[in-house]
Each structure stands twice: as C-alpha cells, then as structure tokens.
Image (cartoon, rainbow, N blue to C red; front, side):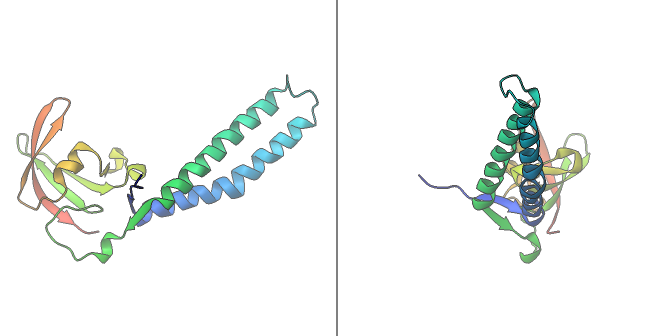
Length: 160
C-alpha cells in the first residue's frame, strides 16, 4: 500500500499545526477537567455532563489523530521558492476569464483542508483546478460543471 502525499501550502500547514496545538494544550485539559468534575457528581449512568464530556473527548482525540495523520502525509510547497512562470501549478494564484460571459475570477490553488471558495481558495482536487493544472497563460480550458461545460481562458498566473 503506497501512502499518498498530500500537497499543502505553508499557510495551510501553519493553520493545522495551530489547531493541533490548541486541541492538545487547551481543549484536551479542559475536557479532562470536565470529566473529573462530572465524576464527582456520582452515578455516571445518568450523568449528562459526564456523557457530554466523554463525547467531546472522543471528537477531540479523533481530530488530533486526523490532523497528525494529515501533517505526516503532507508535502509542504512554498510557492515563493519556485521560479515564476506562466504555468499553473499547486500554490499559484490564477486569474481566469469565462469565455462566454467575459467575467474574470481569481483563485489560489491550495490543499483540500485550505479550500474556501468564499475567499478565492480552491482545492487542487476540484474540477476547475484539475482543468487548470499544467496549463499556461493564454490556454483555454474546459471545466465540466453541474450546469454543463464552461470554457475559461487563463489570463494570469502569480507565484504569490
């Protein structure tokens, strides 16, 4: 079984490490304290606080394992260390123009955990990013969307 490496930007890795640190140093001790306090209330079978705290503990430990797994499988790509070109690769910011409507949109291609279309960050595994990867400024790409095929021209690629 081969372990697949997950691409991640420097900012994406930093955000996961920050969350992991908070889970371990803030949430975990708070939950352990809540379990201890709930135990003092006696019968655990009918103790809602105890069961709620144990459930929180399960979520917390699950998230810790999930983040640790992602970080161990990640390849951090610092786009600022790669010589800029017109080619679309992981980590670039790309401006595309809808060939039909002439509207332009700018996206940063990031790892799955970092994707947030509201702030212009799309996952490298998204249909748009998959269509753009390895193409260059001036190329026209076809993106398969739920509403049909849409053609975009790559207008600008920034290594920022």
